[in-house]
Image (cartoon, rainbow, N blue to C red; front, side, top):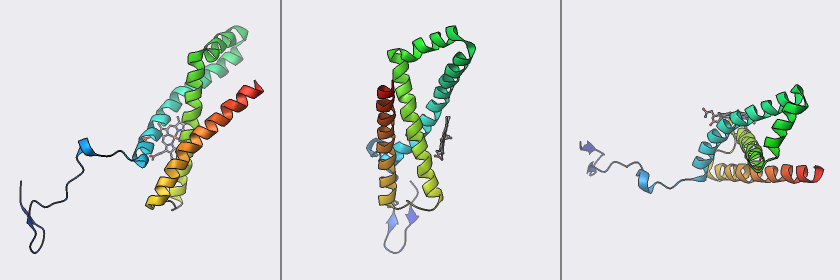
Length: 137
Ligand code: HEM
């Protein structure tokens, strides 16, 4: 490896190294960034399902019954639960970006707070909507 001059008394291979991938510690803010993109992609699929539901509702009783069978199945409900969470998580992630765009929340404590608030807020909003839906019917 080429030697570089780091200044008086510091000659050699003393350059700072990037963290090695195998010992790299995942951070919450990093994971949130990845999950934001994943939820964004999931929302495309969820939007297709929403479109199917609306088209079925507009098409008549038979098409609506078919869609209802799917959405009322356990798999359908699990997908809807995931879609609800992805929507809220992604939405709050968008608000987080808006706060950054306004110039706030860049320090370490602010970044960590926004990441935790997004994560917890997405879960709480999802639970709130599903509990509400359960009681409304
Ligand atoms: C069904 C609705 C939505 C879909 C399908 C969607 C999809 C996506 C996807 C795929 C990405 C990743 C783009 C990339 O990383 O290259 C993304 C990023 C983003 N979305 Fe959404 N999104 C939706 C709703 C929203 C909403 C409601 C907000 C705001 C409240 C929002 C704010 C953002 C922001 C700020 C980014 C950029 C994040 C970054 O720069 O890292 N999105 N969206």
